[in-house]
Image (cartoon, rainbow, N blue to C red; front, side, top):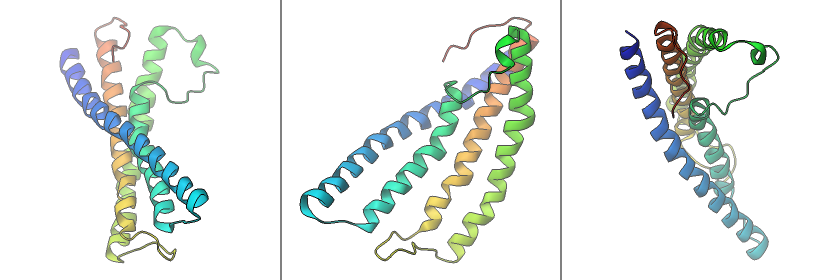
Length: 176
């Protein structure tokens, strides 16, 4: 049973890994976009509302898609007030329960709720309210349910990994 759980966990984590690595390249694109915008503004006294909005959109997409990769890498913020004093088995149980009963259902539920938010934007053909801004605001909003869905997938992967470790009655360090 623990082998099946680990296989599912690793498959979900592999998907998140591919997406996270792809998103990391968006960071380079965002840096280049910002540098170009700064050069145009201060070097040539030119500015573009669309370029500025594209910077915001880029940051939003990086954040929404990158949060699941951050969780996978264990780089998320954790409040260690009590956690640091738990034994390894208690930490496994705590992580398992939080990921399965809190993070997974909340991210999936919020992803579901945000679909109406995206659908309304699409139906209204929503565009930027700024003159010269970007069209297709629904496309940006579509990253909200996607990012939350990926977060749910990664939290499920971590919960399955912890379950496999608990079922196998041994504690193994993560090898990502």
